[in-house]
Amino acid sequence: MSARRNNYENEYNERDKAFMELNKRKMAKEKKRRKAAAMLKFMQAFVLALFGVVLFAAVMVFALSRDFSKSPDKLNFTLSTLIDGKKHAVNDFSVYENECYFSLGDFSQQLGYKIVGDVNVMTAAFDNGDKVRFNIGTDIVEINGNKKFLGHNIYFSAKDANVYVPVEFFENTFDGIVLNISKNGKKIDYTIEFSNEEKILKSTGNLPTNPLDKSLYVLQASPESDFLADLSAYEMYMNPEDSEEYIRLINTAHPLGADYVPGDLCGVVDTRNDRAQQKMREYAAKALEAMFIEMRANGYTDVSVTSAYRSYDYQSQLFNNSLNSFRQYYDYNTAYAKTAAQIAIPGTSEHQSGLCADLHNLPAASQQFESKDVYKWLVSHCADFGFILRYPKDKSDITGIIFEPWHYRYVGRYYAQKIMKSGLCLEEFCEQNGVGI
Ligand SMILES: [Zn+2]
Image 1 (cartoon, protein in one colour):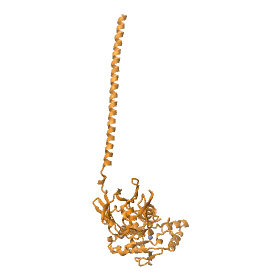
Image 2 (cartoon, protein in one colour; image 1 turned 180 degrees about the horizontal axis):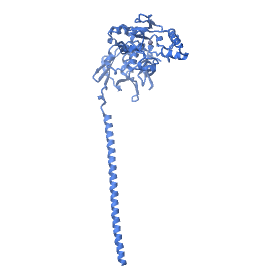
Image 3 (cartoon, protein in one colour; image 1 turned 90 degrees about the vertical axis):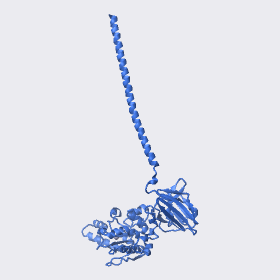
Image 4 (cartoon, helix red, strand yellow; image 1 turned 45 degrees about the vertical axis):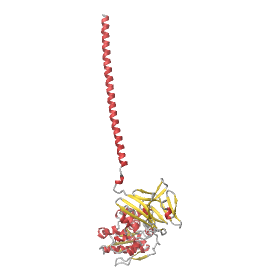
């Protein structure tokens, strides 16, 4: 009995064992299956990540290898010199930011200068004492102290330790050198022609503004050809050689002072006939005369000058009259503030410079002038005569003066075109370019 029982027990244990074995295998299988599933999931994620990396790499390779010469404003340049009628290719030239550059070292022999300086300022020093300073990283050169803008930055190349200058630098910089430009589709050929005569540095004369902003042919065209009237006699006044003389910023922060009186005041021909003849500085008066001639040629015949030069004393008188009127109703400080909002504090009025004029065709200066056709003509053409709209509509917070569609300031064509094109007011322009202050 006991043996049987033992048998039972054994059988029981055997069965248990078998069951447990089966269970164990089942669990192992399940574990294996789970492991396989996890592995599969991991592999899926890995493949997906790999695919992402490959896709990213493909996009990068595509972007980097893309032929950007196909973008619409990309131009090809060649540069050569013409010496005694023979054409030579210039080896050391460069294209940077879509502009053709030559290295300063290239022409040091032909032009007879030594280069001295560092990576901030490089100077080409001529035997006769002439100097051209290249302010690296800016588009400013100083030709015997006269600041000029090249329209493209001068840069230093560490590769060959050379300073690179926009090729248009040649234009108007030297006598005895001619820069020929020919454009054929997207290809621009520059040829620098050296004549036998002595190459003399021009100490004045304006360098061209960014030639790629417009067609190169506009740059070459003489500006007076755009006028209906023959203004050739006025050209020297509209485009003065010494632009620096007329760019001076005048405002409350930069006053002229009580004793400033310009030495070259002249009568303004187009003064309104119910006023005493107004005065301006000679160049400004002549350039304004040219603008009026051209205005009439375009059919605008009823505009005249109501106010131009005002002396410090006259400005004080205007200011005090207004102040006294306000004083009847306000305390001194309020009256002063109210006056200053309308009339320039003596010494801070641009009218004291003799470089500006108020002109319109209304009974009195008013913002209504903005709606006149002649105003639109003035805004788009005044720069050609050397004038800027001094107090634009959207700049009152900077100029401190309300929008004055009637007030035009003479700065010379070079700066006027830059300012009117930039949309900056004089304050911003002077600040950004380090001129006039
Ligand atoms: Zn004015």
